[in-house]
Image (cartoon, rainbow, N blue to C red; front, side):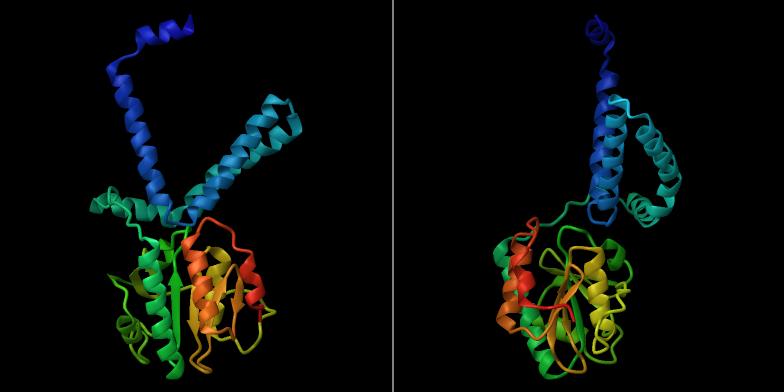
Length: 270
């Protein structure tokens, strides 16, 4: 009965209404998928599901607690998502909301890794400090915005020039997205882990800090010792052969959705 009444009152404008909402949700996802806000959204979805289940199962106390939590979160969302909201308004004003994301195949990614390691090898011999970030599932737009946009083809020569000492971009991080250099001179968050070795300088602590907050893989070249290391999952892996570092990078970048457990035996947190 209700379905028949709904069908008889359904208009073409209702179809347009639904399509507009669907398109809006899709492009909202496109805006957020390159930021850390995706993880927060997943948490909100889980809370909403738990809230619904507690209501259906008549779990009154749990339902009341979840409802109060959702009310508090509604006021906190503008603060939590402030960077994403600002970026969304900027992209809407610049007409960038409909831009298409780029992809890269395994061969191109393998070439990017080889170029990075070739540059790192030279910088290691010359004791030139470097911080190179490979973006994975969690987008790094928040950190890209702190640096200088480049969007250039990745090459060992360009990487070495970016990290020439005393140049403006030398002290920041280089971020690689889809096999291209997206930005350089980017600021990364420092880890707050007090148990780290005093041998680790600002670059290593920044690499660990970013890997704590995102799923990025960060290659670090020490200016003091020339050691090439990589950070992932809040851990720093040092004093490894170049072949092992390259294999680790390939494994992370070729299967980004898979949780890599076999890599932990290759290094230790120091």
